[in-house]
Image 1 (spheres, protein in one colour):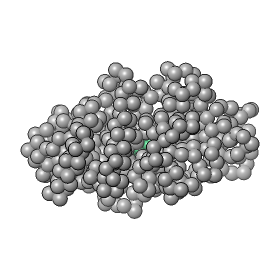
Image 2: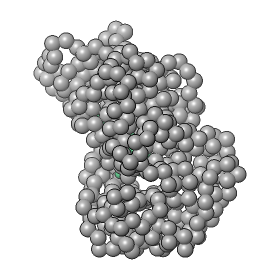
Image 3: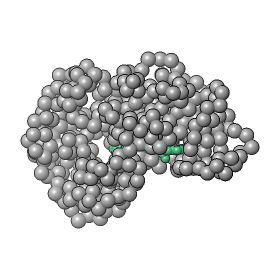
Image 4: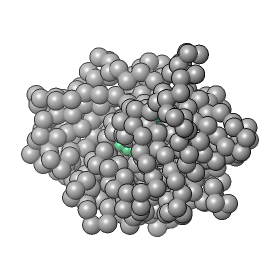
Length: 395
Ligand SMILES: Cc1cc2nc3c(=O)[nH]c(=O)nc-3n(C[C@H](O)[C@H](O)[C@H](O)COP(=O)(O)OP(=O)(O)OC[C@H]3O[C@@H](n4cnc5c(N)ncnc54)[C@H](O)[C@@H]3O)c2cc1C
């Protein structure tokens, strides 16, 4: 957003709104940061500023997979980081799900369509199947529960054709993401009334004012001693520090009319690039195929394109017979934040240690952000944080 000299000088509210912390971004990362900060100190006054409505970013546009690990098969994580760190990364995301169950869901599974039936990665070629077999062996040797499945299992348990086999990650889950966000908000509100949500407040500047930071939006100015960017794919728009660290990347999706239940759990295919799941209410959601238009799928536009939408439909036609000729009711896209190494990042700006951030969830925010919010709170309250998630790894 650009702001004119004239508008910048307008006094929108008689006084600045004074709080202890301002969080920019009303997605799962902003909510998670608020949740953990409030838990640490219920007296903290926190303002969450969101330029549209809460959940309008990737959080309200994703496919609802809560999966462990990262964007690639586990054997590749081991090749890049070694066994010990790969396991640490896996355990981090497993703990994310445990924390969501313990602090957010608390017996309200059905209200947010939460299911923990595991997830699958499917191979359409022998080369990927070999990699999945290698992954399964590695993971079993590290006490991570997985199951190898063959072509017949894929057909009978997932109703899918054209796959030679796959792997089941037994601990994964799925959810309605916008209902999950609302439930986190409810938990925050149960913790007291010191966290306030400001929708339709677009931040255009964070300026230094002595010991405080002034956060300017189109409607008001906020003053706080701490500012947190929870703006994921949009972060580079607000501060150039993020321009070479979090890359805005578009993802596209479509969803069918409700069908009779035929799938045991959510699935990834084609080296985790494409994904589909059947909702508890029967609809089939499918996304992916960024690889077909790599250049066009970088940036902040939330358009959909014929090339990718046709590829999604083609996938249904080829691999999911139960979806053939079914009505498609919605198509949409959203902006994700891909980090340079695929891992999320938490830290403070090198130029200002009162301005913090969390982001770079690389298409896995549901699997990572709640725990990452806790890590951010640890950092702010002076505790050590894991090296793989610390932004200091870029220094
Ligand atoms: C199509 C698609 C499918 C996906 N599928 C999955 C999945 O199945 N599982 C999974 O784990 N992840 C998935 N993801 C990724 C996941 O949605 C994200 O990792 C996660 O939502 C990131 O949360 P966030 O809060 O960091 O970012 P966001 O939800 O994008 O929130 C950032 C917020 O900041 C706001 N904002 C930006 N600039 C400003 C400003 N100047 N002032 C005020 N507010 C501002 C935005 O409006 C936005 O609401 C998917 C993403 C997409 C797009």
